[in-house]
Length: 254
Image (tube, helix red, strand yellow):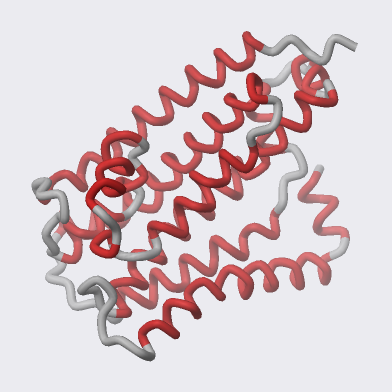
């Protein structure tokens, strides 16, 4: 329904999608401006940073397209409209994903994918079947991890009432952090996003293997191949949190 509504005004859709493409691309413009003053950022060249940027932006674009409306759950909890979703004979999470589905978010996804393709034509990588397969899986696994964070953040709102900004700090904030090389951050932060909230598996750890670079924490190179397992574990935990949130929901009482 929302896609049909969007395509009713095709010119508006094109303008908003292009605007989304350009607006999100300004993040990379800021990185390019940095490289106008330096030759490397944390030891990474511009094409290598573009690879990091492209993988995380593509992964986040996939998750944002499918589950970006999870931050609206807090509003539904406050005004009691979550009851409507519970009464319908369809999975609540599927309804949340479809609620006000914004096809214009393809702009963010296409922008990240464009930079990813460009970076692959510029980086100096000794391609092997293992590196190629890992790079192909990275955006998909990263999208699953970001999607799990969206769902877990939405589940938390059943208790918090409105925690969309807390959720955004891990989703939008996380993708911004992952656009930069891990070598520019402290080891305490790297440990946190590796062992606590495993955002490092979105692109840092797989990209380090693809680029043939050592891990700042001293982890073995094969750690990047754990991304599919980490993504599956994150989705399972997010599913448990979502079920617990639904059981805890008590409507508004009005």
